[in-house]
Image (cartoon, helix red, strand yellow):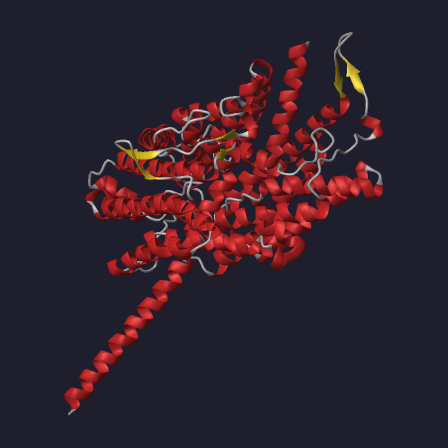
Length: 353
Length: 279
């Protein structure tokens, strides 16, 4: 493509920092004791944040780590949500061990099929085509009777999570559902961290920085991109599955482009190319949404909360392109420099004596 | 005869899509900006026409005033926000214009509410041309078709016969073209085109929330099929989609929304760079 601007690559000016492992462990630990003192509302909000964090993580694998700007990522989230809604019987609980793999497989399969078509395009085409295919799925669920049409479909009974007849977690209980979301987020984070540090992930990073070069040294770039696209679809499916469980209701809006835009915003808000960034972005978005739609603060304008969100997006793109993660990086490096200077200074003083 | 009516509808819908997607592809081709808010301007055009027609009582007054207002908004947007995006990654262009959509959509909700409105067809065009004893065709739709054709011709002339067709930024600047001004004008013209499409479509379709988003996605499909930056491609693709959509509605109403995407998938497999572009 010879169009102007088409050759631009998404490259962070500085490498994002990795959070020390003990930070992550303490955050998980803090979250794990949260159900002891939190209200149902806060537990549900927390679970929602963690579910959206998984969703944002999966998109960041594409945007921040592979350089594929997908604007139709809600499709896989929605496919998984519809899968659980469609295979759950009306009045009894389905098995968690059956529905989760089914939902994730359906999402992965959709991503594989769509990815096969879209990954051969690049740049602006890729954005438009991913969006268009997501809208195709939207049209299927919206116009046909498959999933209850535009009215959507209920998941009346949440799946049962038991091992050998023993009920491990009761998903109807907000605290226990919170734990499920926490485990899912930790596992997703762990998997992505492993993948990104494996040769596969390094190859994706290579593709993000310079695709031609990777092709020239013999990497099957198409397969790598398709692999990333499918993995991202499966993880988005995990998030969609949990979301369907939490809300007990699925309608076509769940895979509409609005949702794709929202998750894209989360990734950028947190700072793309950092796993912790996606989590921070999801938390920030959900909390900001709570803030903007609080009628105590904004009165009659609370129902127009998207106005503030839109304004925030514009501001962020213009003033804070690396998101909150970029700010943390900056502060972190500054602290490290000051520390270093102190150390060197002390040394010099000692040497002076 | 039934099929003639369907064909006329297909052409009319296709040409309307062309008005929209030509602006989209022009803004991308000249400035390298992907503009999601394009659909919002379709909506802005329709709502302005609705509001102005209610105020002035005449569609003929509402149309030009609405387009001028849209042009002014486009100019304002370009000079305050959009021009900062030219050197930025597509990702940020998508995100920022997505933010603009949210803003436009909510402003629409605040100013006009969330009801579905209609705009009356002007008296002079408000009759149907009889084709057979039982079938007839509304003249307003023919009028829309004619207007779209005229604009397509003007666009063709402007792009192929004048200096505006130049898309090499440095070269044009060296030749003495005021690039910032040109870009602002191109953007505003694209917006005005989209608003005009929304305005003349208002009496045919309803004026409803979310109308811009729906049409935006179809425009993307048009641009993908036709090839980015190509006006000719956009014209061919618009007509193709007009026909595919109309045929789909007649043959399999439940699946008509999917027909255009299948067409896109086929084209992607066959010619990923679009119909009009050489790879």
